[in-house]
Image 1 (cartoon, rainbow, N blue to C red):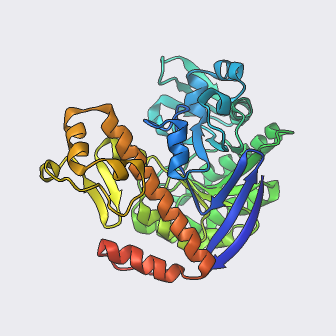
Image 2: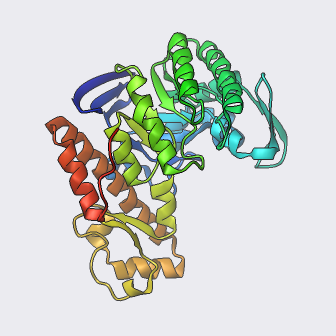
Length: 371
């Protein structure tokens, strides 16, 4: 993988990631394909939304179907018929999400499988091997996601463990030609975040991610971290904000120098009938859409908006038809990709401030201050 910085506008960056399997224009949003599928989407539909890279989930694919099944097809790209790059998370966040079902030690994490209850173990070496077997283009280190809230002592112990696991991940990654990203932890504590970043810099990674956000903290706490952390990260390497978020979060992340994002929000919200449009969120199951013949978003070029009315989408939702979720997902993912394309163009042209002003004006919201 190589990363080229093409333009800047304030802290915001316009770049390009190049892989053997293709290029990714940044800032980029990565749809989440947890089980080797972006829910409700054919690979060609994902391409049509404008997505150039997707995310797969190491933890879930390891447990089901297992890498032995995937390897028989070649790798994850062959298994799911996705031709572009894939980033795989390490499984650390999923282990964190198990709560009392897991036990963390220096060696790694022992937990009860959510699939069948069997006792299983994952550490940095296991995570690196699984991601190697998956054929990931970007491999994430195995880390512990610091919980929220966490006092400084708890966050420090967690961060230091993640640094030790980062070194083990780097060692185990070995001669794998895929890119390896480190993950900055440290909770909401600036001094710990800086120590984590310094430690990761010494180990050496192809890119760096910001972890431990969007885990229950108030929005202003997340923004506080983003106000200082991206600017401390190496300019020549891509910066990835994990698990975030709403369109407003993407805009604020880009304004502060983030290059890559992923989140289940556009796909999950689509299945719940919450559809993103320029003015905010449209709830398609509301009764007043029953007779609405207009398209979901007349300014959108996606397959859904070009072919179907709000009344039809409302009907599908009320009937629980799977086509409704599919059409909603096509639209939401296209909306996110159009937003990212607009941000890239604005940075390239040096007009990001005007783009941000218009973005919030359509929502009837003030522009948040930029520290």
